[in-house]
Structures are given as C-alpha cells and as structure tokens.
Length: 96
Image (cartoon, rainbow, N blue to C red):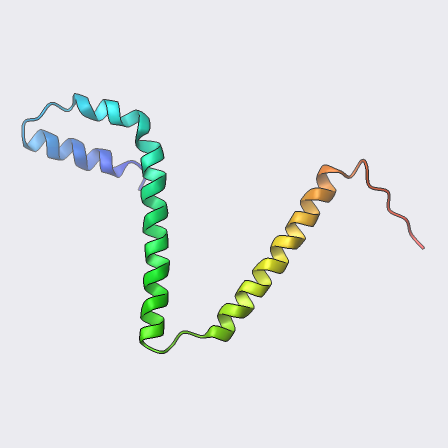
C-alpha cells in the first residue's frame, strides 16, 4: 500500500506525544523511498521463492529456461514493433 509507512510513523509519533510535524517533511521524499522499499520487497519475495523451491527440490530449471527464452523473444518483438511504430513514416516496405 503506497505511503503506508507515513501512517504508521504518524501513529507511532502520536502515541509517544512527539510532534507530527516531521512527517510533513518526509512526505516530499517518501515517494522515492517507497519505490526503493517496494523494489527490495519484491526482489526479496522472488529470491525467497526460488530458494524454498530449490530447498524442497521442486524448482524446474526447464520451465525457467523456457520462460526466459520466451520473455527474451517477446521483448525483442515488442522492441521491433515499437521501432516500426515510431519510424513508420521512414520505413518503406517492398513487396514481391
């Protein structure tokens, strides 16, 4: 949940009778900090999933390799489509 840390911080400060004015200062930079927290959380969840799957000996390397291969192909296809869309006025298609 975006910016939930500010709500938790404000509640904690209020419970200890500390002025909440400092939260307003953090409001300006919290969006950047929140993106970092989200990234760390996501990467941690992914790594933990792979570690547990390997530990339980249920990690399927073939499926992983197939997913990576398909993802690369789709990414390349999307890049080509984007390039064509951006430069369609310069591209001359010859048939025959």
